[in-house]
Length: 130
Image (cartoon, rainbow, N blue to C red):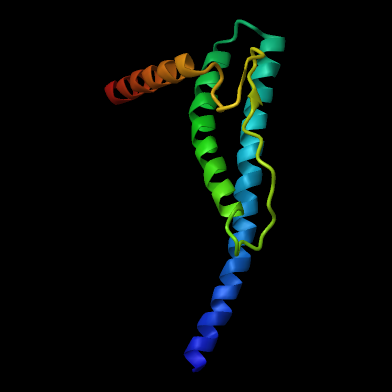
C-alpha cells in the first residue's frame, strides 16, 4: 500500500513538473520565431546586401517548420480534458520579413517549402564534403 501511495504522490509531482515544462517549451518556441524574424528585419534595415540575411532566412525556415510541429503538439496537449496547466494561445500566423503572410507558418507558401528542402539537401551535401 505504501508503494502505491508514493507512486501516486510522485505522479502528481510529475504532472506539476510537466505543466511547467510545457509552458517553457511554448514560450521558447514563440521567442525563437520572434527573435529570428527581428534579427532578419534588423539586418535588412542596416545592410540589405548582407549575406547573413539569406543564412538567417534558411535557419528561420528550418526552425519555424519544427516549431509549427511543436505548436500542433502543444495545442493537442491543451485540449486534453485532464491537462491542468496554463493554456497559452498559439499564433502560427507569422509575418515574414518581406511582408508576406502565411497561416501555415511558411514564409511564402508551397514554393518556399520546395526551396527549403532543396536548400537543406544542398547544405547536407556541402557539410558532408567538407
